[in-house]
Image 1 (cartoon, helix red, strand yellow):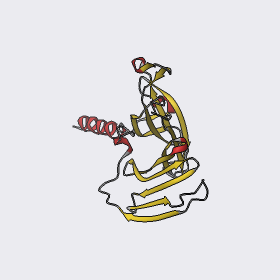
Image 2 (cartoon, rainbow, N blue to C red):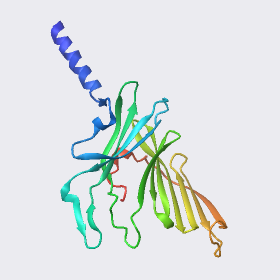
Image 3 (cartoon, helix red, strand yellow):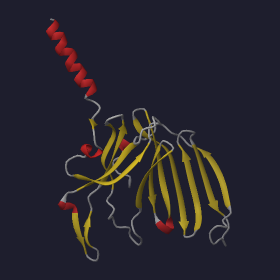
Image 4 (cartoon, rainbow, N blue to C red):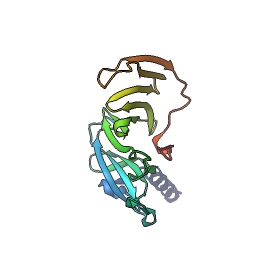
Length: 215
């Protein structure tokens, strides 16, 4: 009976602790068929350790296409892995292998938006830069065992003129909208009309659940 109890306890312990993947090096978390596209460091859970975010990219040769005027384009999608730093190892906090499009998408009349990921003030920012047309940005915070979307910002520009700005706080459930009313503005001399509205938030979106940021 004691032997059986020991086996049961050992099995339970392995199951519980096996839920958190641990490795010495960030690269050890790479899934097969992916490479590191970008690496970002910063404290995401406010424990004073430098956590690690890996932007990863697939390597499927079948997704390398040839354009009529652009030559070969690597259309493999990109994803994200978030790792919490412990004293002597990293622990997997989040993985989403294919939520970002490739950096070689067709931007139509303009080039495709440029993805930038940043860690600041304990938050994770997914920032899309659209050159002279502005940007949009998602703010995630680690809570409830995932990174939840707590903010969204967008700027619509006609370089260098800012036409409108939108800022949504999903925690306070408020939306700020600023629209330039100076038709003769040339950039820097905009006059904004500001409005605030309440929004309804049923649940916060989790980063691990997002299948495609483009959608």
